[in-house]
Length: 133
Image (cartoon, rainbow, N blue to C red):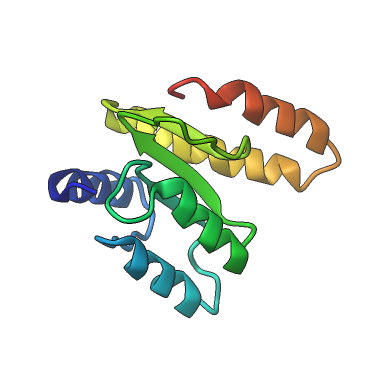
């Protein structure tokens, strides 16, 4: 994504206590996931509109490798793409507290999916999909 946004997102997420690895291309992101044999990466933040392949295409390729990966899309324009109902979409512009809340929500939803209430969790994620968290 844009260099400045990438830097700002990195700082916000790092300050919230998360380990962050940034990439500047979809090819690099795929390479990092392929090399993440210990599966330390559990969440990806991606724009939707990017040069080359779009964010949805990128996540589709990543999920061929890691189907359990959590995804937060951040975008100012989603176009005609369809997003997995388990993913969250955060429309630009947004504040740092909104970003961190969206990450925590994804993690919480994922934890709830591991419990016997999966149907309720999926519905909750779907209902939250169109909001900006």
